[in-house]
Image (cartoon, rainbow, N blue to C red; front, top):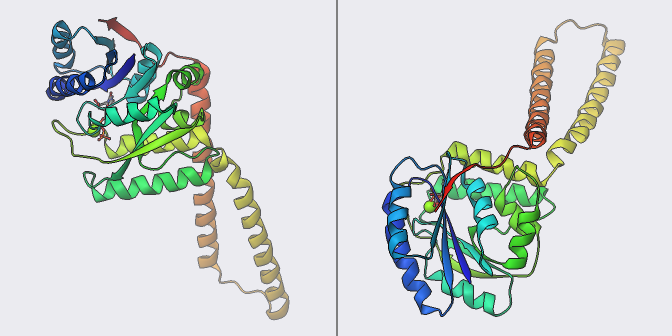
Amino acid sequence: MISIVCPVYNEQQSVGLFIKKMKEVMQCKNVGFEFLFIDDGSDDETLRTLREEKRNTPQIRIISFSRNFGKEAALTAGLKYAKGDAVIPIDVDMQDPPELVLKLLDEWQKGYQIVLAKRVDRNSDSYLKRLTAKGFYYFHNKMADHKIPENVGDFRLMGRVVVDHINELPETQRFMKGLFSWVGFKSSTINYARPCRENGESKFTFWKLWNLAIEGITSFSTIPLKIWTYIGVIVALLSFCYGVFIIALALLSGIDVPGYSSLIVIILFLGGIQLIGIGILGEYIGRIYMEAKQRPLYIIEKEY
Ligand code: UDP
Ligand code: MG
């Protein structure tokens, strides 16, 4: 059986069309399937629409959260409750084309436990989004021990073993793309051009994406913490050389009073560097704090 896992947040216009398309696609394959919708605290008619669809489509299962917990939490729940031998997280806005699921399944039947869907054409995203995404993958993969494949979103196929291993990971700060690749296993990749959203608008603001990027980097690398030792050493060395230079100058040409500009520049520069260092410590300590609380990742209000 195949589980189609869909996190939905205010997608009332998209779910109907998505279910129709997805059913057509699944009928081409002679396999059992389930739809697992995670309603991430939508405040429009998403849940009601889904429940109505369920009347005609018994394969639909719905888990509804008590509030909006975010896509990472919704995906975590989706993987946990999915029953299929293969699990495919997919967006309902048609940006992850349903017909591609057939290709994913073909690769899976060849024996791959992970099949990635790579966006080779992101022209549907704005220039700024493509640029920042590129920057993110670059920095993340330079720093993290485990690279995440570039331009691969949450849309992919994972076999049961992979899903079980992801479900066992205990952390509450969950950057799913990172966790997906952390577990390893051989993967196959298919390429696609990412179309535009059919209905509604993106739920990810620039600020949300920025936080997701920080989450990704802090979850999978401690380099931002360690780098301060080296910056400190370099700054100390430079100051030592400068000190020697000033002393030599004073000995050779007498005491020279002016020096306000160099002083203020150095003080401000070092102050800035120290604040960045403290800020980065704060990012990690904040995450340790959240992890230590051991709060659940989400609260399920009801299952249908
Ligand atoms: N989503 C969610 N919770 C959120 C934000 C988004 O479950 O807090 C879902 C959303 O309904 C959609 C998927 O995540 O099915 C991807 O969101 P979106 O299409 O807005 O992101 P984009 O494609 O612009 O990256
Ligand atoms: Mg989308």
